[in-house]
Length: 179
Image (cartoon, rainbow, N blue to C red; front, side, top):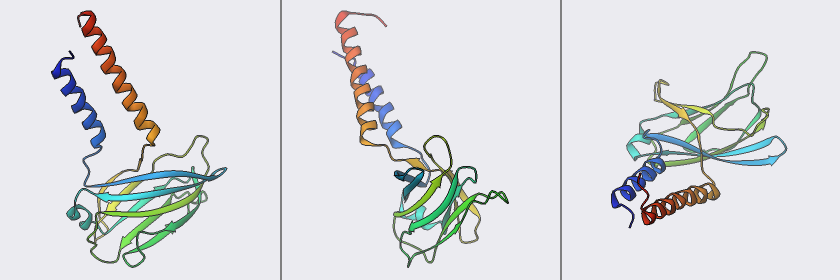
């Protein structure tokens, strides 16, 4: 039988990997290729608690000028709660594109959804963007990188790898192979 201590350690490692970051506010996205180099990112901004979301007045997403063009704010969380301001990337300045969502009032929710479509200028598929959280005085209170929501296939691959490790451990134990 597989050593119980090894199983517990393995499960703790998997839980730590799945737990993600410890930031008070996280931003994840789902990517959709609309046509050729036109993409849409559907974002989810979430807080670990109502207090962590309530302490921010807004968020700014940064779209580097070398990689993005033709930004369109397709949807905002709720027009009554947020105002969206979109600045296009400009290679003449050069200036990065910015999307700022500013809260109109204190909001008692833990999750917000919005989406942006854009033309991708890079060679490989687009990835994450940096973002900044700001307070009522527009002081930056936090920052991070958006995180891609894993597709179900990625989770299945992770579980298959874990099952393979368990099988190898059982086989070694059954054959009496020492560490």
